[in-house]
Amino acid sequence: MSDEIVEVTEATPAPKKSKKKLIILGAAAGVVLLGGGGGAAMMLGGGGEETHEEAAAAEEGGHDAPAETAAEGGHGEAGGEGAAEPYIDVPMMLVNLRSPDGGARFLKIHFMLVPGPNGAGLEEKLPVLLDSYQPFLRELRPVDLAGSAAVYRIKEEMLVRANQALGSGVVSDVLIQDLVQQ
Image (cartoon, rainbow, N blue to C red; front, side, top):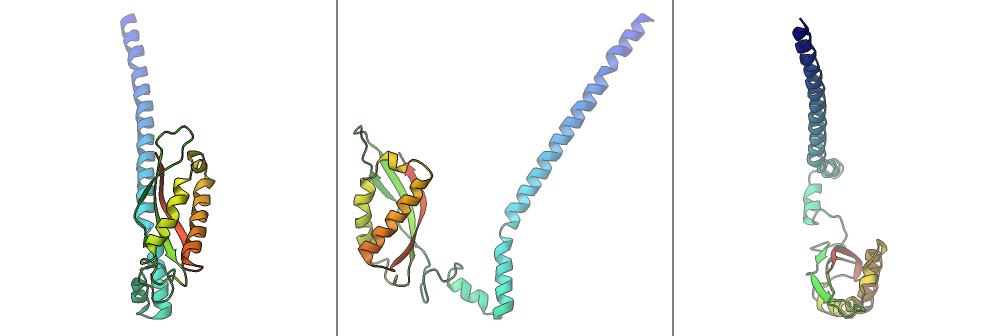
């Protein structure tokens, strides 16, 4: 009889542990499924804002409104009236940085330009602008690129140099896409 009691005692804890494991695994699986479903819904539903805006524009301006926004590139009137492209993608630049220890340091930067009201023919003036950016970028030190405000300072300096090289109103903004220090 004592053998039977031992067997019952050993068998009793096993179902309790397996129920706990099943509950924990079930809860974890539920969290993963809900999180994955929510993430998928946000990713798939993220483009819905643009379609709602297009639908509202179509209701206000008739059926021709979406065709007009498509001709403008879908970015509004950033380039002014009659502008073919609202942004000008500048090829990636790779420049040496000035380092205090004399070691080789590089800056890889990719940016876009937003033409201003006087921005007609900005693509033809791009070599002049890049020539004005070269000395500025080469004089940067690795310390100048540290911190969260570094991108803002570089962006503002590039805008100032664009206005100096090309004239006021030709470039309205500089959009930095990539900024990598090596």
